[in-house]
Length: 414
Image 1 (tube, rainbow, N blue to C red):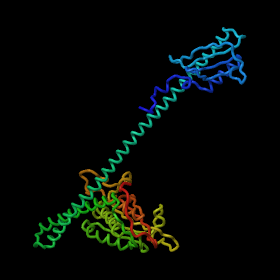
Image 2: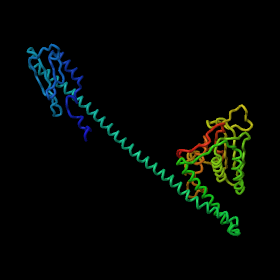
Image 3: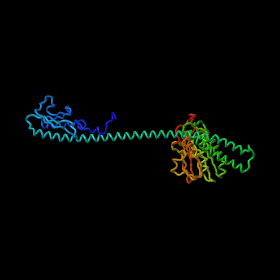
Image 4: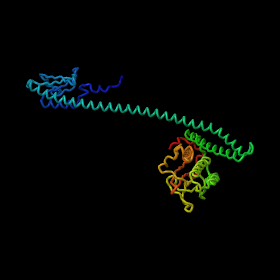
């Protein structure tokens, strides 16, 4: 391939690839000075590579005789070593000096060859490493694009299927309601029970479909949150009133405890109601019959920065409360500590077995987390010793001026 040097090219022997110019000049110069003669190395084409001694001075005293020896390395003639001397030197003495120079020269060339091999090997290793990293980067980029495409397909599938399912299901629920009201004639007791079961299961299915629709919107960044000054106590009272009949049927108690100073937050009433409805519904669902579920709200100081809640009896007009903390406590089996970091993942359920007691798609808490974060808040889960679970939602209180509209962007994944 043009422009690419092969690995073997680095080992082609020559004076310039094997010799260290400075080391050769220093050695030859010291030899010439010591023996008072001229030492030269020529390249195969006759060009001078190194010249040291009397002949290299500005007023050279030309040697009267020269003794030469070819420099052969690895079977290749790479130059000519010459020693020049005057008539006062015998040929035997010059031959000994030449042999000594040649021996040292061989050692220098061998050292240069070894250095060249090490450098070439390091270069080849780095080149191969870069090639492997480049290939891996391309594979990762292709895999990432494939995952993104699958993710888009999943979002489109969730949105399309959920929308197509919700339309006929709404009609089914509507006709079921009319049957219960006797629009098509009075129902017998057993028939009414059957229709009521259809409606209950239909409502559950509608919740799952709405959850998938919200998930698709959150994933695609199209779910809008309209924020405004919002009174929190009436919203929590409405949520509690919705679940009172359900709690009574299960002989459970739903207690609401909202501090008198908890007033306004800056949020979307529909979306915050969705958050608290989901949390209270889960609390009742996982609590045994006869137990109590509590919905509490308190002003707190810097709760979004690891502050602590402050009770009613400790409220002070001189304290700058900056957030509201809403707690939903249940008396269920609780959530294992090692599951706390995963329960807000989409489609994740602590009990994922086919025989699990409580059904659901595992989307409610994931949606709650994103909606709370869209309000500049946070949601965490705490242990409610000695049993049960406590979800804590922290929201900033309403400042005088804030943006009234926020669009969610990003992914559900934490």
